[in-house]
Image (cartoon, rainbow, N blue to C red; front, side, top):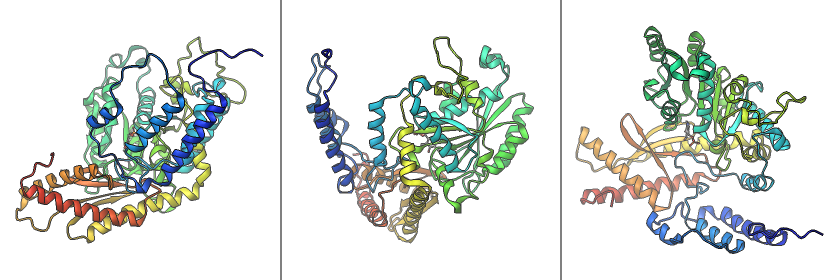
Length: 501
Ligand SMILES: Cc1ncc(COP(=O)(O)O)c(C=O)c1O
């Protein structure tokens, strides 16, 4: 028998099993005790740096078993847990436990899902996952797509496909300057910051984004959209893309997608929907009307790592005619010896997006779609929405709270003390300052985790519930925690404390 090569990185089968079992035991304990832990660490970055130690790069290696144990200790003792039942910050979901196991399996098999020949079964699984995601949100399976790292990347992937589809062909050879016209993109003022990043990074400049005002309900003002498109055409620019949002990041509002689709059709514009957060809610029969128009979209961004509860990272770009992805991302360099026309439709994902080598993100999404099923997702998403409504409703009823908005699973509210003597602008700016300090207090307190939204220039606390562990009790307790902390923060401010201290 050939002796295996001496190397410092392999772990033999028995030791791997032992370390793995111990790790799985630690992870099971963590998952079983989320709610009993603080949501986040109380340590400062400096304290965490001290804990980690300031060791230099090791010259010689160490024991895998000890390293895994100490990394597990560090992370379990000093992390923020978005899987905690009272985590409602930003839009990061509790991670499905099956996704945790899926990531381990994916890393063990380690297929490179850039090329079909390198990932025979994994590519098929990703194709099936994409088909199921289309079915989930209610667009035809003729849409194709690709899994990416998250919402920003999903939107970027679509942005570039839109540009290739709508800009003159000279773009590929000559670049943006060869077009001779400014390419313009339209979105509402509540669109996520990815759009600015895309315009800057892809050479259009931030000035090529038209931020359309929102109406009283927070949706894009489609009359202003149409007027702006016409004005740009008259000024010799080339409008190419409109972004509708299906669940805006601050308040969860869904634009009038049907109306935006009609404007896009009228002016031959690419219609993209940023559904990174909200589009999974299209699975609810009662929200069919809210999402009317999604099947007109040329492209859709959605994020399984938000409301499908996948562990990070999993985003997805869906495109009505996937040839636009290939047109954008395929350049067939010679050293790729992958068959592109093979019988049975071999699919090489390096031609569908920005990445070349790609990990197996699809596995966790594919497995949780099967573990939960459509009916299970309907139940969880519906309950998240009901819990957000409860948050809003309890704020409405409480004398010291003011309810702001409730859309999908996002509720906003603010703490307003009853003893304020100031009025008008002075009062409003004090309430802003108080709620900012209150959020800081809550985020460091470890009892719950919220983030913020600015609505009509006022500062609100914001709870986004994409969390299958949250219960009604958690919401009721959270209201009490907010009020208790609000009273204390108000008292401190009244006594002249610096809210940042
Ligand atoms: C509507 C929307 N688009 C895009 C993003 C960016 O997603 P990610 O953080 O996964 O890149 C977010 C994040 O919250 C979002 O809510």
